[in-house]
Length: 164
Image (cartoon, rainbow, N blue to C red; front, top):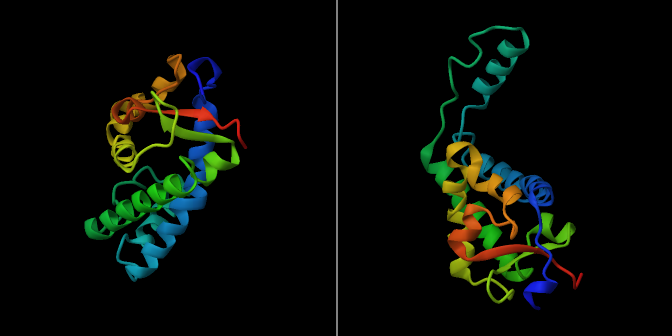
């Protein structure tokens, strides 16, 4: 595939793919981790109280934040990373959301499958992409190659999968 044949995936299609992945990957992992933690990952009752206070118009609804377990949060983050890398490996650079929308992650130079090193670097690159009001993600809308900060860090690109 030559650079002239590549169609880079833009901000909105990537946003929708991420939303779908949250529903199809992160949410099931979160439910499993919550039950494995026997409810100790976070204090769900505090979320319910905050929501009830907010619904009643109480300006102090967010004064008390739920207690969370750093250990279980770390287990959740690692589990999501592992599941994501497994999908990228098995589905040639795609997660369920990307596969459904016919986009995939490739090496930015060769347009071939990404390596495990690129997958992990890209996943960890979400952290700086999120900092400073998600500017690392918003970059996609302003670049011709539609790369986010995590793509630049991992030398990856998100393109339309013409083979599907």
